[in-house]
Amino acid sequence: MPKKKNVKKPVPNKTKLDGAPDFLVDLLNARSPTGAEYEAQEVVDRYVEQEVDLYRRDTMGNRFATVNPKGDPKLLLAGHIDELGLIVTYINAQGFLYFDTLGGHDHSMISGRRVSILTKDGILKGVTGKRAIHLMSPEDRKRVPKTHEIWIDIGVKTREEAEKFVVVGDTAVYDQSFELIRGSIGVARAFDNKAGAYAVLEAARRLTKYKLEAHVTAAATTQEEIGTRGAITAAFSENPDFAIAVDVGHATDSPDCDERKYGSFKQGGGPIVCRGPNINPIIYERIISAAKKCKIPYQVEADSRPTGTDARAIQVAQSGVATGLLSIPLRYMHTPSEMVDLQDIEHTVELLIAVARSFKKSDRGIW
Image (cartoon, rainbow, N blue to C red; front, side, top):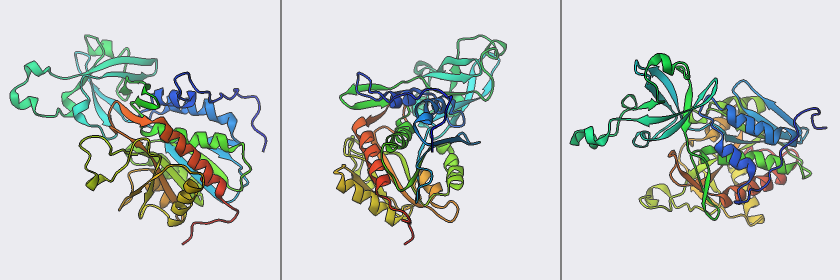
């Protein structure tokens, strides 16, 4: 099928001087709190739309990039573009903003952060504040503050002044951008899950260079952090035969991680391949076979229940989808400085490509 005409020129995925691909960096720096994924959507549109055969949007804000739309079987690759955030719920008389959390925050880390608030007029800067330690009792110093005991200070004096800049319902993220700190080791506030979204979308971009039998769609899904909501509608509308969700997983090679409880997963050890009731055994074996054939490093995780990823929703969509899960090893999940080895992201892209190329017509996940 010919590509669309009369639209913006595609953006090549060049590698920055520091070794990180432009597409990944732009996606990591895009502010996309759950339910307000606008900036990440724009990055995906810019880098992907003109690189694939079909491209569509839906009412959940998902993005779908399809390669070889007449192929068989149908393979869905899914990675979510939303991230943790805050949502303004109240502005007091002095102009301080109170908020609720979007997604699973560690409340001990919220205060004392610079934040970017997404408003209709652009980005508004602020700082999360709470009572200073000097003004706390010994008991208060030991206690993690509750959400209503923290506020956002935007440097105004009154509610009326604050409402010139921000309104209830505006969202915010930590003002923390991507940075490489040593070699291929990077830190960012939202590797969860811009890393996974990049992997599936970049795989789709590269798959256009190959002759495929499979119909492959990469979906950038929304609202995963509050219940895999974008994946629910994406799986129903695509109704694939196979799917692979890509998210981040816990690298347990840092201090204070008990490998007896959480398993042994190393940063730089390659993507983590999940095995368990959330995973179809046929797609699991196909992933492992592709990794071995292409000499791509991987790690195996056992999960005894539905995973906390898009895979849990996709598996039970329609009449059921043969679903797999890859996790990119990550340290310090749900903190402002998540850490990933970019080589693990690249190996994930390579593994997705290898799996997609392995499908033959009429392959199915029935077992």
